[in-house]
Image 1 (tube, rainbow, N blue to C red):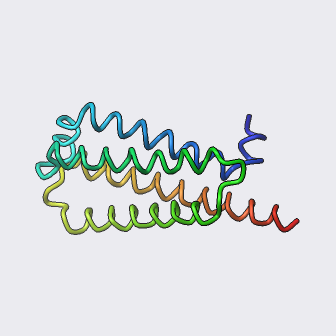
Image 2: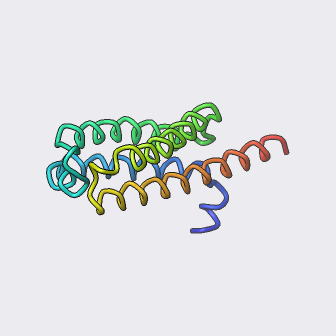
Length: 136
């Protein structure tokens, strides 16, 4: 299993990101009220549902790219740029809107930003491997 994952890291991480994003979207749609309460008073159901809608699009994009035999580098770069923007946005929220977050909300945003950073790095590693393999 790990040999296959390592052999096609880029395809695997893109598929994982797609499935995880779609699962997250479902959870946010299903539990928008409780999630909003956990995050903070400014996280209304409408805002949580907006994030859920974003995750549907983000997940569908990653799933489509990950299903390709060799994911297109330009599409992967879009995913990497989106991940970077997510991390920057998370840091901005933690710095500028901290008073509107609960301790749980701060924790959730922090954990999500670290997870996205990890996924971003795996995408970069996978893209580098794919490009080196194409040159060989």
